[in-house]
Length: 319
Image (cartoon, rainbow, N blue to C red; front, side, top):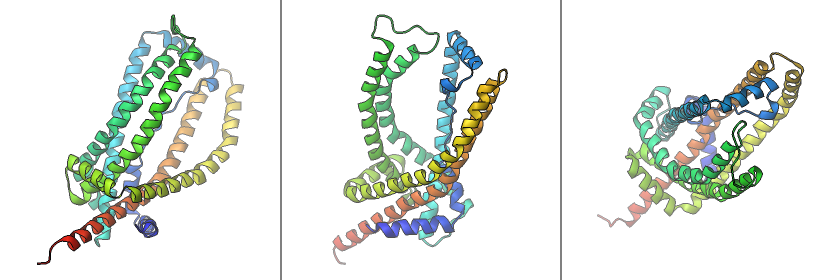
């Protein structure tokens, strides 16, 4: 497989056709939920959190939060599917001689978006199930350690229970990661089968699995190359950004510690600001990099199809 040719062509397509960046934005879309780092919380916020955990409304709030996160995840996943479908269709049409446009890409996204969504959903279920089986004891242990709740009665100490839960989760996490890579390759191929060949969901998955079996070594090599590029890109962009933000973060923490009455509000506003900054940086990178990575896989899929067509022509009996 011509890896250098694929990478160079995908880079050229990404840079020359800015219309793909919109679909790259959708394909790389993510929602960043601010997490609570208790050591940074001011005393007022800690006292309020402890009281809230003891109240009956805590479990209602947790249920509402889980529902909100689930609905948000579905919505974001659908937008990602629309973006990926548009990228695949437009790169494929570009290789056929038709320049990409937002209108044509959006039309393809609406046509294939739901199929691409269901392909990703079905192939993601085994990984999700494996991770949740491993997470169940860890979640139960963490819940018992929340402030205001009694610890595990008659069981091991909290620290030992947490360590055992982590040890139980570790192999499931590793297995889930490996399975995720394998099913992710099938998903990547199945999406291109769906869009390029206009196949249904299960047909696309079966066809993607067949292609992976036939060209497993070459596809894994390409995955490793792209994973290395992605890791290098994250290192080059996020490490300098983090280093530049260190003085700002340090100054902010000093300011929060020095204030007396408005510390909770300042902490929340400041933390939301940093969350938005990280989100904007991530989405900017994704809008440009996602067309490149998607283009690499679409060009690879086109090569695989061309190789199969050539082999079929050679094996067919002369007329």
